[in-house]
Length: 179
Image (cartoon, rainbow, N blue to C red; front, top):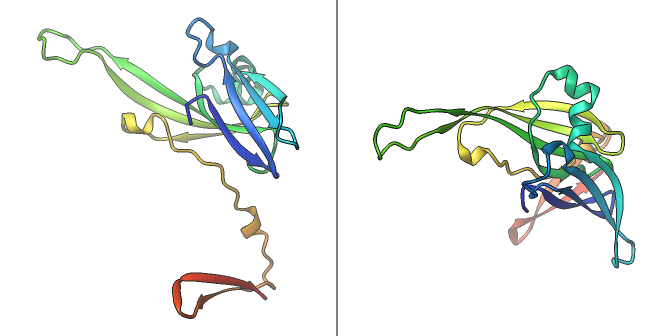
């Protein structure tokens, strides 16, 4: 998926998150809009859902309280359990100027300062959480984020026992029984 759009299944419904204006070089970053689209039940059309601009994110009390720089979000990922929540990444880089005196010099270099992962409630235009992530190379600039949900596993009571049994004859196939 490109850095400005992704799809997923949220509570059994197919959704798309699109950062409208992300690729428009003439649009100010704060005007880029995160829009959640929902595929209709008959799979025939997309319905527009909540919209939040980057400016709304930057103006949220939570974002301001953290004192973060105003960075361009990218790599949006939908929450699997909350239809209004999107996770985005913001990367802070600094350009280190070098003294180019020889044609073999590479010139200016990027210095990675920090990367932030934000959970955003698009409908309420609020930042729910911010996590700082350390990056060391250009390969880390665009992270491989995937939506996942672990609550089903954490909700198992102590009275329920899960047992994994090997299937006779085929070691690679396993079956789970819940007693």
